[in-house]
Length: 200
Ligand code: HEM
Ligand code: HEM
Image: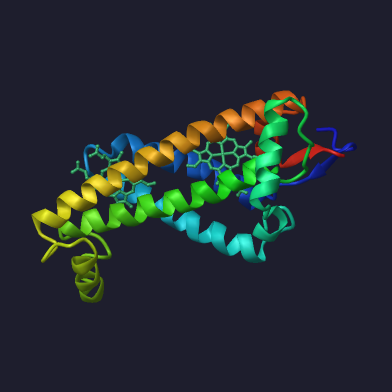
């Protein structure tokens, strides 16, 4: 590939993280109704990826670090207005709207995994099942006396809402990627595969 007029933006680990997350999220989502082992393991992979990305967001390469894409609400709103007006500025790393979506996705995925683990624990399975401290803590938090059937209903509802909310965010994320790609006439999906973008 001709790399003359391009710059490396996404390091290899961010790209592996991204496409592994796409696969593991999709597998977890479609196997949700069955509650089989594949569902739990796909969820654990999402958890491992989230842990990795949080550490890499602190100590990672230039464009992977959270500090390189922290924008205030005013910048995010004005970027979205410009984007809709077809005149948004081009960014080499995440743009302000994209960066807000990265944080929303990471938080929403964390809540989805956490509620999945709590739900699994009500069946006596998974890493939270034997954790007495968490059992007592959540018993008070969800207003149930124990984590029997009552707790199961609560966590099932919470887990379902969290996973569907994440799915909606994923669709908006993909629309945003396609919209920005069109506006700046650059293939952002390809950039998440090769790691490279046109030099500014
Ligand atoms: C990003 C990761 C995850 C996604 C997208 C996801 C998604 C879903 C979905 C869509 C359902 C079906 C909800 C319904 O319609 O009632 C579900 C159910 C469930 N999930 Fe997850 N989940 C994730 C992670 C986890 C994890 C880590 C665990 C635990 C290890 C877990 C345990 C469960 C259990 C026990 C059910 C109930 C299945 C049943 O009996 O119907 N999930 N999940
Ligand atoms: C096929 C569907 C998808 C495509 C084409 C896609 C594409 C992309 C692209 C192009 C970027 C870089 C955005 C930029 O240039 O600023 C990105 C980033 C990101 N996407 Fe996706 N995405 C997809 C699905 C998903 C899913 C399912 C998730 C989560 C469940 C997700 C989570 C993320 C995250 C967390 C980032 C930030 C990457 C980082 O900085 O580590 N994406 N995506």
